[in-house]
Image (cartoon, rainbow, N blue to C red; front, top):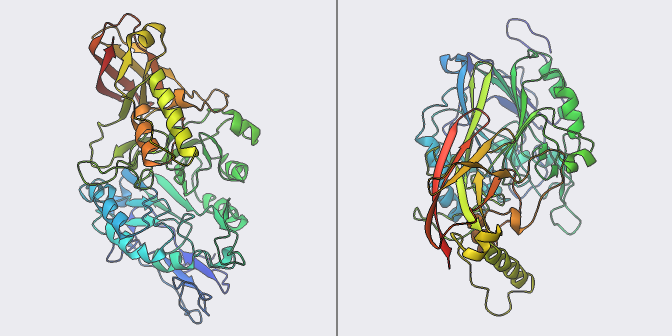
Length: 508
C-alpha cells in the first residue's frame, strides 16, 4: 500500500473486500441501522446463484474508492466500554421477538459505548439469511456503531466452496475480517469458519474452525503498525480455545503471531458458554493439542440466545435458556482505561449485580438427572421421572457430605475465589471444580449446577455437565432439619466483590 496525502493503492482481484482501519480519534459513518460503513465489495460478475442472493455484480473497479472519516472525541477517549454480543442466532421471527426483549433492549438503554460501539460476534442469525435485516433492526437503537463478524450460521450453505460462502453476509454487513482502533486499543475481527461447500445432494457440507492463510498473513501485516505493548482484542466467532479443548485448528499459528503482543486477548462465541480463561491456565486437552498453557487470556462471550431460546418462558415472556455451562443469556462488556483492561457479564434484563446461579447438588438430584437422561435416551417411553428439588437435601446426605451447594459465578476464573457462610457462620472457601492446573475435563452430574441443569434437561437444551466457573462446598454436617440460609461471596480477578443469598431446606 502506498500512502500519500490519504491516497492508497491495493492489488485488486476479481473477488475481494477492501476496508480501512479506523484510527482512534476518528469515526467511520454508520447507516440507518447503525452498522459501521468501512468496506467496499468488488465482485464484477456478482455471486453465483445463491438462495439468499449474495452480491450483485459490482462491475469494473471505480477510479477510486474513498472512505470518509469524521473526527471523534468519543473514539479518542482512552476510557472505553465495549459490549460484545455473541450468537443472537434467531431462526425465525418469533425468536427475533424473544431477542428484542433481551440484550438489544438492554444495550439501547445504555449510553456508555458511543466510541467503541457494539461488536456482534457471529451466528447473528440461524441459517436463514433473510433474517439479516430484522437482526440488524434489533440493534438499530444502539447508542454507538455496530460491527459484526460472521459465524457458521451466517453462511451461504449453497455455495460450492468457501470462496462465496459469506457473499450474502458481505452484502448485508460488510467485510468478514478487519481491524479498527478506539482509545488505546486495537480491535481485530477475524472469520475462522472455513466452509467445505455444499454436498452433491444439496445439503450443508460442514466446516472447519480455522483461520485461512490469507487472514494470518493480513493479521501479521496489520499488527506491524501496532505498538507491542498496546491492548489488542482479537475477536473471532469460534474461540481459539475453550474450557473443553482447542477449538480453532491452527490456534498455534495465531499464538505465534501474538507472541510479541503480551496485552492481546482473544474473544470468541460459538460454544454458547461463558468463560474467562487466563494466560497460564493449563488443561490436558490443550496439552494434547500442542498448547501446554495459554499464552494470552481467552474470553468466551456467553450468548444472547443462551441455549438457543430454549425452555419455559420467564416473567418477561422470554425463554429461560440457560447455557450448557450454567450461565444465563447476556452480553460481555470489555472496559478499558488506557492500558488497563477489565470485563464483566450482564445477564439479559438484569443489572450487573446478578452474577450467580446457586443450587443444592444432592444424591437424589444426581439420581434423578441420570434417570431423566436415560429416559430421554430411551426415546421418552412412559412417564418422565419427576424433578427433584434443587433447594433441599436430607439430613443423612448433609451429615455424610454427599450433598453440597453448587455456585456458578459468572465472573469466575482461576484468579477468582468463592466463599460461603451458612446461617451466619464463618465464611469457608469453596472448591473450584475446574482449576485449569493441567487436569482433564471434569464432567458429570457432580460437576453440574442444578437449577440450570434441571431446566436444560427438561427443555432438551444443551447441558455440558461441566463448567469453567463452578464452585462447590459441602454443607455443614451438623445442620438440623429446617430452613437455612447460605451467603455466597465471590471476588473476581479484578478484586470486585459480588454477593448473593440462597435459602435451602434440610429435611428429616
